[in-house]
Length: 197
Ligand SMILES: Cc1cc2nc3c(=O)[nH]c(=O)nc-3n(C[C@H](O)[C@H](O)[C@H](O)COP(=O)(O)O)c2cc1C
Image 1 (cartoon, rainbow, N blue to C red):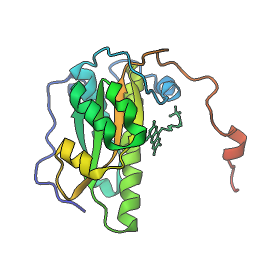
Image 2 (tube, helix red, strand yellow; image 1 turned 180 degrees about the vertical axis):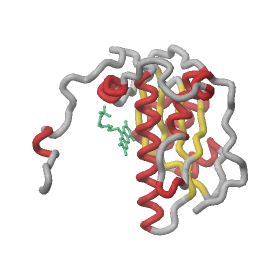
Image 3 (cartoon, rainbow, N blue to C red; image 1 turned 180 degrees about the horizontal axis):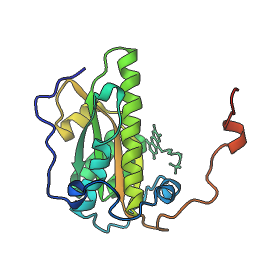
Image 4 (cartoon, rainbow, N blue to C red; image 1 turned 90 degrees about the horizontal axis):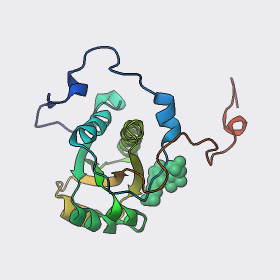
C-alpha cells in the first residue's frame, strides 16, 4: 500500500466542509442518480470553485479497500490543456470541449489483485464524483486514457503513477440534467436475482 508523504489536509474554506451533522438542505440522491448520464457536449457555463471543490470532496470521501485511498485528482480547467488532454485516447476527444476535467491518478498497480482493487476503488470515486456533479446540475463523462506517456507529459504526475481515466465536467449543452425515465439498460427482472441465480 502506498504511503502518503503529506497529511490528509482538508481546506476549511467551504461551507460544505464546515457543516456539522445532518443535511444542510434536502438531498435528492434518487434524482441525482437517475439524472446522471454521460454528457459529451458542454455549454461553456463556468463551474464555480465551490461546486468544483464539493465534487472533488465527494471523490475524496469515497470508500476504498482497507481505506487505502489509492487516488489523487488533478483538475484541469484551461481550454488549451483540456484540448491537449483530449488527445490521450480516441474516446477522449470530447474532453476538448469540457469546462473542466478531473484526471484520476493512482500508483501503477503491480499484480492482478492490486490492479483489481485499484480499478474497483477508482470506479467508486468516479461514481461519487458523477453523482455529486449531477446533484448540482453539472454533467460528467468518462474518458479512458490510452497514452500514458502523453498523459504524464501533460499532467506531470510521477513515474510510479498512472492515469487510467479522465472525468469531463460541464453544464450540458443541450437538455439539462433531469431524471432519465427510460434508461438504456437490461430489464430489471433480467439482472436482479432474488435469493439465488
Ligand atoms: C469504465 C468506463 C469507461 C468509459 N470510457 C469512455 C470513453 O473513453 N469515452 C466515452 O465517450 N465514454 C466512455 N464511457 C461511458 C460509457 O460509454 C457510458 O457510461 C455508457 O454507454 C452508459 O451511458 P450513460 O453513462 O449515459 O448511462 C465509459 C464508461 C465506463 C464505466
